[in-house]
Length: 534
Image (tube, rainbow, N blue to C red; front, top):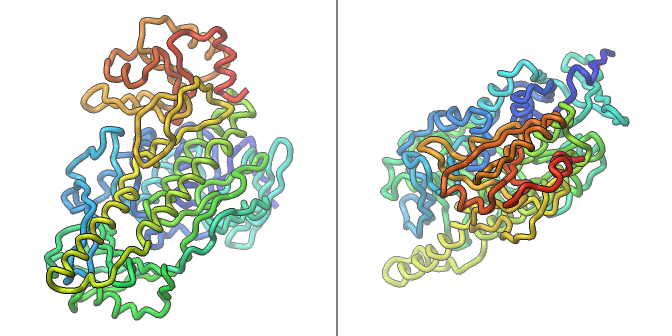
């Protein structure tokens, strides 16, 4: 049995889905030697995730590959509305409008926007970024069979596809191995929540002439409604001919009894040619692990929290796990982070992830709730009145799911052992978002020039934003003494000064504020020790 020592590769990641790849990309960008193992071959299946949130785009921007996500091939002029219909040859009930990608910014709160980028394109972009770093070693067809953790390391037994068994000794182990996580199972961590909301089905198919077959218009998704409620959703995958038809097994609907060909024709309403590429049957769930870490072992993404896909919070929440854990592991391995830094991962990310699972659950119920659907196919004035009332309710409810800016960028890490509160309250992660530099909050976006956001000043270091004429150079001296990466940025922009409220604002490597004040602190070293986990 071979032994790979932890001094060679201090981090072992299990699972090469988007969360494992994102964590590897971050660690690689910070020159942290990492092994990522994946039990399957390096082959992608059909996309489970299809939307990248603005906060995930900010992560990609921070690592320098947001352009690849912007320009993977989705047509910029393709419609992104979500339209409720009785059928493509039936009635339109209402639509949640969204600007096409020709509108580069759809919110003033971020230098990025939510955009379609299905997993079949997003994962290879992440993988390419991870592989671009010599410190990252991706190993496919390799299964974690067991592990034992000790005071200074974790011994992981790896089974290769040829039957060879190898032990990798790492300083830290991270399970990004999905809902059925072997890492979480071996830690004995239980899941809380609803493990079976419904049994649903996704059908991936090509329909070459769909847009020519109806007059409802171009859209990102068509949501099909009948007298039983919302029963299916047809979403474009590539903006061309590839679609995903999701059959929702809610309200006692048994999707296994559906004749798929009949269902497709029922949605399309005509005899258009189509080709089924893949079918997946899956359980919709809403769960969160009781804890996200145990000693030197951590879990992230679906291993730690599973969401109904409603609202696109699953993978996008997991990316924030990777960002949070990535900078903290880097700090610890590079020698400038304290023990409380890694302890804070669970304290910060578990409440944020639980909140996201609850929001996903609300989104699910918004979609499949039971207002009155009777008579929506009736012709004439009576049917029109019923359709208008139902459409207004569906649009009002589901706009909250598809435009929940506050859920994506509004969470505040509070309480946290590495955040120094200043007593100011801010609403935390509601659908509505109010920018704030409150400690624990994501630092607000402000344009400093036509193409530079204040967020672009943040990186693998702590950033002190100075909006005043205070001489803050002592921060640099103390940070150098502590071997802590640190920069000071003098900001003259008046909009930014107003937005950030205080003269001095300290921002962590993940873009969250950890301290602010109008004056220099009495003890800078004590402050820096606190925010770096000592």
